[in-house]
Length: 566
Image (tube, rainbow, N blue to C red; front, side, top):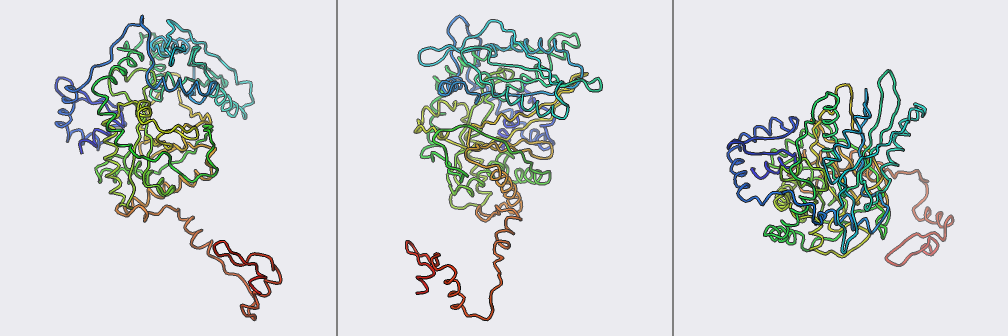
């Protein structure tokens, strides 16, 4: 149970540390549920021993290195540079976010706050120069980001939100040139001043080579803290950064040359030996020879009661909610594809050291979770298998995905991504307030119309329910197919809760309306016919109507009504 507890803490970004020999915990209050607090208390002694052992075996921390020597990109940056060279002028690796700002906004303070963030994080001042065999980071000593202000108040009020969505999508799809900075943009949309309450939208766009999902949260958090301190005429509350992103890049390369690399490589090469190259989901159209990455999102929700039952099942089976949901998703993929050996990608923050928690940059890593669903096991047996796979992957999470692909060297195929084509994520995002005195701040979702994989299921654990998004490749799937898939997933979750000891193929996939359609509606074949004729007479009447129509087929032989009558 200790391993499962440690995994749950990592997934929820709960950081444990020792202070004068006492166990301390750093996490948002909404994450520390009563059950989790009880578990921390019950396993306090074991957790202290775990942290002491980790300290003894911990490899050296990142340190600041000289900027006089040529800097090297991280492995993830190398891969993104390579992909950018394959397809120049692409917006595929843009990361966009937007904040709705309602209230008295000081635009000068906003610009000042954003430029302070750029000054703090040298990765935001980075471009890349071409060198033999790759690229080298070039850090601008100073950079003053020009923030465009666009007046949309002149647009008719009933069309304003449509124009906002159009502008956000357009801006998010504008490509970057990696050899020319900046690789970050900010735009402020002014929507008007109704009832003395001004409304703006602040849009951020960054290239993925300098940022990731965690970084977006750091950027917003620092923006709120800096803006609030300036308005209140107080000094910046942000501590100095102990290291910068390229200190991490140097440290990462040194670590991968040490003794830590071999056990990581050995685990993953054994784990993925003989794995299928592709997951053959039934698609609405044939797979294109080259991926276009055209995508769309479908939002749905796992309701409160079902979410509560899923959490209860995870506790009963000594697993995490992630494991239960991941096992259920694998069951869905099994039932759709018929494949019993399934590889699914899982992103992780990859910020195991405290020095990296407050940095903006590309840290995210991807793990490949391979699940064996053969022999039609009970769901609880599948869950045990998934638990073992998750714990093994977490214990070997430090190997960059780029190095794994390089080591395994799968056959290159431009029609799909290597090692996996489906991804699963469970976010544990607390509902924290971003509001500043006099300014209400609300995040806005942006759908930029691209997707990196065939299918991506991202679930977000809320206080009493689970929000979910299917991101799907529109070259392969129609919206109706994905809507049906979401319904099947919810139906499987209900079936699992009702009977977790049932075998996988005995758990209902079809919804009640679908079962009614298949079993009743499509079998309502009753029809009126003449009652005073024999069967051979009815057949002869049909022969007169359609003598050349096919009446019978067997293997490669067929007979028309006329031939059969003869």
